[in-house]
Image 1 (cartoon, one colour):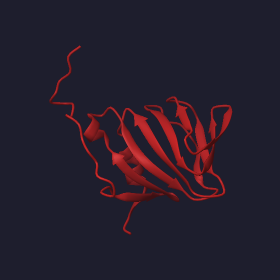
Image 2 (cartoon, rainbow, N blue to C red):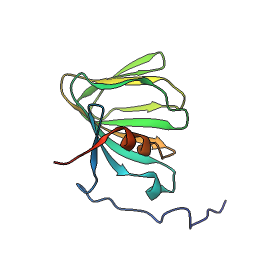
Image 3 (cartoon, rainbow, N blue to C red):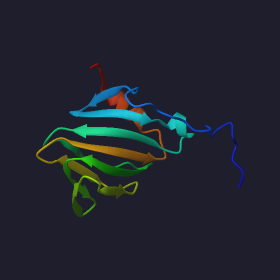
Image 4 (cartoon, rainbow, N blue to C red):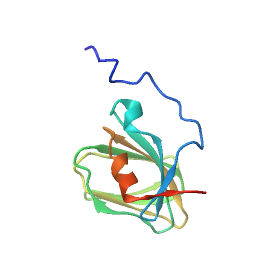
Length: 132
């Protein structure tokens, strides 16, 4: 099947430290790859949540979500399941599935990828830019 190359970027490179971070609730979100850069296919963000904090139960009806734990520990509730994840673990959450997460005793740093992309706009609208 052919794709329309005008709608799909040829690729992109994001240099470390070049993306704006936002405070969304109490977590730091850095939008690493946005949906414009992937032709809407996905977006990826770094999420850093302080100890005991995270996301309340919610669903994403229009996107699958995947977390990769870079540092720390975190407890996920995905549907009826509970997962205790740590560095190197991956959690996949199908669209329409209620989920939440809570950081452990230290901050948790994760990569969150959504397919398709676009949801990063909602996080940006809900947060505020962080200027270090």
